[in-house]
Image 1 (cartoon, one colour):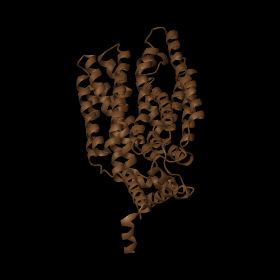
Image 2 (cartoon, one colour):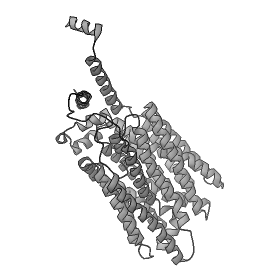
Image 3 (cartoon, one colour):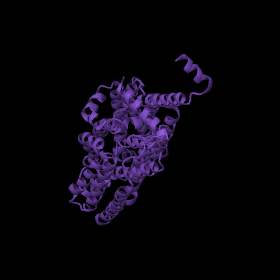
Image 4 (tube, helix red, strand yellow):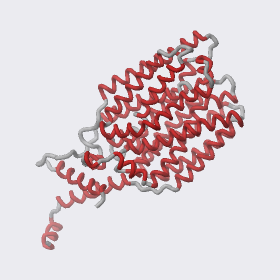
Length: 477
């Protein structure tokens, strides 16, 4: 008997005890709590606050370079530090998640984010770029404790028919933060000539961010709960039955590394999200190259990308909960991301901003909408492994490709122009689409839930065996 089957059988036995009013359950049954919505919304809020700061400098790249006296590539690193920090720290953080749980991870994330925002407040002086970079590093470290959590929170708190929607809400907060990061900095920090006035505007922006981050840290201390008293699904109940001594983090990593469908997903996910990171980081430079003086509209185009993507994320999450067509949906959205990137690349230099808004929004709908699909598909392919570990490996791939694509596309744009840089990304999205088509759809979590429900139904039917059927059974025995 497989490990998954043993866990499911154990869960079913516990469920029978719990349903019997004459017996005290030795392990929890299943139940959904209203508090789950407060948990996922609070997570989305502090994820928003952190992701806002990812693009906070990049979208006003030309203003930051003038204020701090650094070059454009140096400011690009204010975005890429988010990607670089993630790579070495994700495995210690997922180990900590498995050992200490969601509440500790949430507390550390919001504390680091809060500290980073206050360091930035102290950095508003032309000779203190190193200090503002330190603040950004603290926020990037907080991101390691945030980015892979949506699927874990969804699995721990939500029912099997709403996990994809809950995961989408978690991703929604992150994307809304990026949207605000595109929109707000160009408004709060106008491109004025006076340095003192510019410093005033930058300081106001940092103070607002620090105030929000502090409030969210306090709310997490008060509200955020580790997990519900009773698990929401039979798959979660089975996962709780695993004795701590039987779980090995390194063994889990090895099993994931041997899971061929998951490895293909890691590569394809990294290619897609890495392209998204590159587009977001270099958006200001792409727009200014064709539409000089349009910093505010560059931010609005970024906002359009993310808002459309948030709609795509929610629609994809609801669709997955209804249909469970993980591979088909993931492949379709991937192909549409490729098509959207091709159209965006070919229309950027036409001279019509309204066309850029439309093509960028279409690109964002599919490229950003892909994010929760990757998370949920990974959980299906890797169950019963930790959701934090699988999500962390996906995000690690995305950060690696994000750094590579951002640097390469930036250099290509400097030498050959924006069209060549965007075609560079299209090539890798095509490769990612082919890889996605090769993934075998092994939906382990769905099978576990179906097996548990079927076994529970059979057990209930056996326990209520009356009348003629009972007589037949007794005569046969």
